[in-house]
Length: 319
Image (cartoon, rainbow, N blue to C red):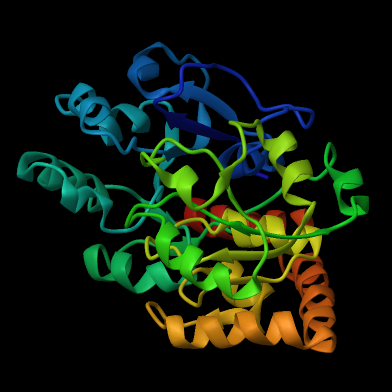
């Protein structure tokens, strides 16, 4: 494997150990790749030479303003042979920013040596922006070491929806479909939590990743009708635990792990039919649960992730 460094707005320097308690997806990817991490704003202090620098550009306007006057790609080329942009959030996220930031983002996309998208469905967008560089998805990943016992937790008759009541997460749509089960409905606490959500759902407290996986393991059903197509970690976590999850086809993890419960964007009619089938047909529920575990194991393994990424980085570095 090539020598890789991730650069982001996070303030730490070093590698992610396999025992990290908050092993969210980008940490899992760094961990599996045995990559270093450095803060973007400290890029001129890095002394090590790398084969590949992976740029994780922050989402918030204030963080981006801090980078605006820095030629990040040129600076990254001083420490790495190749520079890659890695998608974080939906492909269009920068278009909610002021125009000067949109131009900055576009210029970055057209000056890197490669692009890593969150989903296969995002690749055509980035090929339209920069058709001259190799573009591939970087699969979502779990480092399972600290959460293997979560799969032994007995499931209870309750429903988890995957996000809060905002357009970003589609929480209200998920809630509407969840009511078909006539069971208690829960939701994680997240930064976009809206006032009065507790009138409709019970919130879990803020949890670290390993705590979240153990809490999620108690649920029999899951719904995540999130119109903002991103890394698909909720559907992936459900697959690891064998929880059938209703969600949108556009997210790779949803489509690949839960194919019988994946619907087109905005198709609540089909989502409702999926919920009723899970509720009323025990055989269908068991089939979806078994398929979720099997598809997760066959499609989202760490070995497959490493093989795919090694091929990409090798190809990148040959050019």
